[in-house]
Amino acid sequence: MGTERYASSARFVAISFLTFILAACGGGGGGSSSTPSTGNFTVAGSIGDGPIVYAEINVQDANGTTIASSASDSQANFRIEIPANTALPVTITGRGGVDLVTQRPADFDMVALILETGSQTVNVSPLTTMVVKAAQCAGDISETKLDQLWQAVNRDLNIGLDTAVLANPMTDGISAANIETAVLANEALGEWIRRAGASLTTSNIRLEQVVQAMACDLGDGAMDGVMANPVQSVSAEQAQRVLAVSKAVEAGVRLEVLAGRLEVDGVDATQAMNDAISAVLPAVTNPDVNSVP
Image (cartoon, rainbow, N blue to C red; front, top):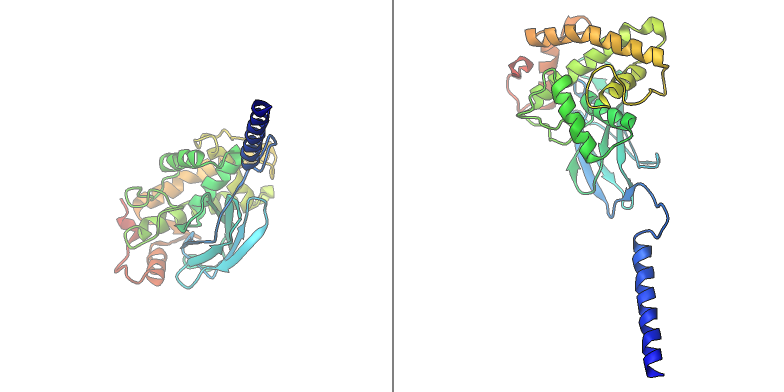
């Protein structure tokens, strides 16, 4: 009898422990694909094509629910508090404001991702937008995939990007040491996108669709004219037209950057970019985007 009671008690303890483990692991069900943050944390960064002041910053959790909003300040910086128990990954979107190079609102929405908890730097720019949308198009927003896409950017979209001082434009802080390459590289990509869009106005293709098609091209790890997946917002024929036009305008942008006279809106933007740097980071004396190797 004592032995039977002992065996019964042991079985009860074992079953209770197994039940606890299954509950902690989400049981046998599928569970959520997102990981909730465990406490409040702060994210700060900059926003820019050219530096964008007073841009609207919208923050959404993994379920698409807006959890915070803010704005960039007079130096194109922003700071947001991410609430506890927020489902990750979090998407930061920047729009509007005043681009200090073009002197108009941002030409297209720009996005960045938060993949982990803890205070961190997250910048929002054309480069981050291309990488995030490429990962989304590929259906893989893991850190491994993003690293692969940054390597593809360094190889295929590197127009004015000095990776020796700005290895990851989304998570590296913008400082006096790298602001010139950050402004030049993002402005070059922004101009590339704008010129492609301007060449497609008769095709009723919006700038956001140009960004999406180019990102889906990058999604397989190379700007090779082959998209990771079909672009939902445009037809296959329109997407191929976007890619063909983007390749056609790419050469002009690259040559202008090499010559040290990138044009924005048809005018040499060198002085405008340098002035923008002085406005948002006065500690940089005599900025010169053309000093970027």
